[in-house]
Every structure is written in structure tokens, then in C-alpha cells.
Image 1 (spheres, rainbow, N blue to C red):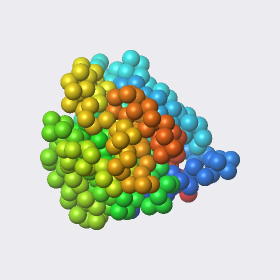
Image 2: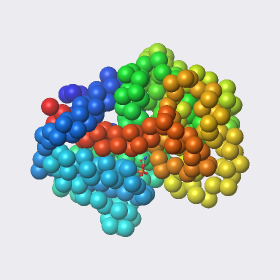
Image 3: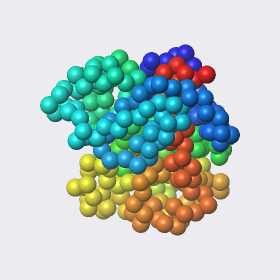
Length: 314
Ligand code: CP
Ligand code: NVA
């Protein structure tokens, strides 16, 4: 898709419903190619810088495998490996790396850092998670939903837990853009930011979706097609673990809660999961839990985003 070439992938708010649908469909196409043993090396001789201020299993590994599959070289740069934001400014690092690399993936703390990287980089920058957003995870989530239900439009997704973390923010944006019904079940202390909610309500008005914040999880989950949760304390918030346990225990996704969801409902979690906290072992291991499809799909979506931003989605 021409409109995606040379863009950054920082937040879902920058993309239209058609563009996001295109990336999901492309991910499905690339997954099939890989299953069929077809390797087209669309990123041959390219180099990708993978910068990580925070730890990662899925994001690091999916980008590494996606690069290898498409013929690119991935270079993993940990917080301790480079001078980003310390001895060397973000702007200088961006200008240096984009003279050497064809694409930059960044996982870190402040969302402003990735915005600055993108501002000064002459090559596409992809968000691999910030404190505010995790947009590439949403593509894998929606791809998994589409594989199961054949569509996104009109499906009800209920997120239970910390309603203002990166996953909740990006899920709300994604559902609103794609014409889905998003319900966030969270206590008032952890409800989504009101400006972001208003923005998502506007997107939902355009797409035919809806956005709702609900205090009571048993009420929220009624008729859900997808029940989603995430850790109660995100990376960087470890000191809040005890407080979150008190606030979020009523929002645990357990078999009792799942029984109130729609008959064909599925369970999703971006992982890593803390079993016994936000989700029980029983739900995590249930046949309706698609968490490992979702994790695998991170490879195909990382690939789709890289090839589309490089204009190699042929
Ligand atoms: N879901 C996800 O982004 O996992 P990692 O933190 O392991 O990358
Ligand atoms: N909210 C979680 C997501 C991990 C993929 C975190 O930021 O730690």
C-alpha cells in the first residue's frame, strides 16, 4: 500500500481503518507464505536497529525472526549498549542510526523518546512498546481475532484490569478505529485518560464502533466476543504491585467471569502473564485461550509492518 511507505508506526491514531486492515491482511498473507515455505526476502540487504530500554521476549524475538525471514540483518541494542539519551542525545542517536540502518524499532519508557527518534530519523521508526502505547501488539491481537471470527467489525472486546496502561490505551484506539465495541472494566483509579477516551469515542463514531468504561467486570463482560487482560503492574511500575493487587483483584479473568461472556468468546493476553493474578491458570490453559497464536502472530505482524513501511509489500 503506497500510503504506508516511509511512514513511522508510533501510534494507531496515525492510521486509517483501511490501512490497519491492510496490515492485518498482509500479516495473514505473510503467515501463509511462511507456512508454505515461501521466502521472498523482501528486505534483502537491509539492516534493522532494535533498541530496547526495557526487557522483551516476544518483541525482540519476533523482529529478529521477521528480519531473518525477509533477508534483513537485525541488530539488538540494549540500554547498556548505546548512549541513547545519556551521553548522546536522542536526536543525535537517531541521525547516526538512520545513516546506517534502514529501519529502527524502539521499546522504551517515555513515549516522547520515540517521537523524538522519529522526528530526527530519516528511516521508518516502529514502536515496540512505550509507557503509553503498544500498537504492534494490537495488530497481532486483531489478526488473531480475525483468524477466529473472520472479521473485526461489530465484535465486542472487553478489557479487564489496568485501564490506563499501554495495552489498554492501544486496544481502545484500535477497537475504535476498526468499528469494534470496546468496554474497559477498571476501577476509577485506573480508568482510561479522559482526553484519550474522548478521542476514541470520536473514532468510534466514524467507524461504527463504540467505547465504554464500566466499573463492574461482570456487567462489562456480558456477551463479549473477546476478553482481554494484561499485567496489573507494567514494566517500570513494579513499586505499585501491592496497591494494584488491592485495586485489581476484583478484575481477575477467571472461569466464573468467562462464563458470562458470549458462547464463542475467546481469551487474549499480550503476555507475559502473571498467572493467579490477572488471569487464572484455568482460563490461560482453556481451549478458548488463544494466547500462543497471538504470540506467534507477532512475527507475521512485525514482518508486515517492516515490509509495508519499506515499500516492499509486493
Ligand atoms: N507482548 C510483548 O510485547 O511481549 P514482550 O514484552 O516479551 O516483548
Ligand atoms: N503493560 C505491559 C505490557 C507488556 C507487553 C507492560 O508494559 O509491562
